[in-house]
Image 1: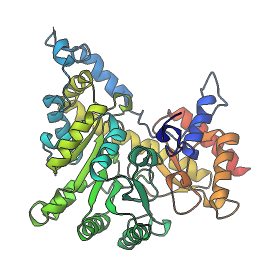
Image 2 (image 1 turned 180 degrees about the vertical axis):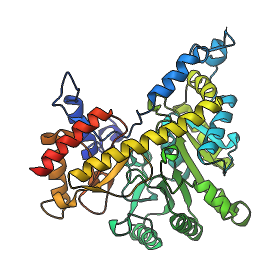
Image 3 (image 1 turned 135 degrees about the horizontal axis):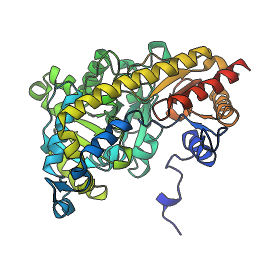
Length: 429
């Protein structure tokens, strides 16, 4: 009696990624109430700098109370326009430029607001790709992309297989192989989507990777979607280079305006400012038709005017945003180093990383065989017996078994120490 969309399983919830969450929800760790419960290490959420945001809110009660100079702006904040509040969009593009070292500027007229990066990615796919067509996606990639990009759009994902031998870097041959695979499957490739910084690798793209990507997109006449939601989490060198800055360095606006209009950015405040519940995402594109269509589609997932008003005030405080960015990056680096040290004590190494809220951990030596079945067995053991919910590499579509994503920014130092103690005891056994 239901539609095929409601009754099919293409949402992706059969993945171990979602299964781990379900088991965690049934038995969550708490230092006092449930000290033997499962510790959530599969949640890429930034909780390290909540105190900085809370401090700003306490000092800016007018913004919290929808007031300006003590006078109510309640009626002004009731207005809902899918174009977004101009003041908020202005502050947002300035913040995006600031994170990128002010090496690139953004036009607020090219910005489309959405209810988080999930909504932004799906809207962009609706604008660029028809059902039955394909996008290329380098592996390993965020497990939720099967839901975000495929479920309602009917679009196919063709993996660009990357390997540990070169640090899972994107190569021209890997891009060409994926394109040929799509051709073999009779799938028309409309674009390539990358996450930069990478989720789950925690790395920023190299100059060579960016060059490959742009050259490939020119040759195939396809779109580039750059998901840059972790742009503000870069805590170590090399620094972050946005796809827009790379395009400017290649003078694409003048020398190849076609590709210039086929480059699109997805961003949100969920990771950098630690505000996932505010549901603030955005699409940035130089393509007027894409901006117009995405703006109309945004009616299905708007950002509340009250949220826009509050955050426009927060982002307008340049002293606060500068302090937050600097301190947040410092805290991320410190917590990441704690995780790496704890893992090393347990005989585990991580891919060298410089960004994100997680590490990509090499556990191949713990596999009973070099198979994804052995990885699943290991993952289940760590989840059910050790009490740590990590993200299995297979759910990230990794090309090699034995790699797991481990998040570190969603827990206290004490909880991380308990997690490392459990993992060390397991490794010794």
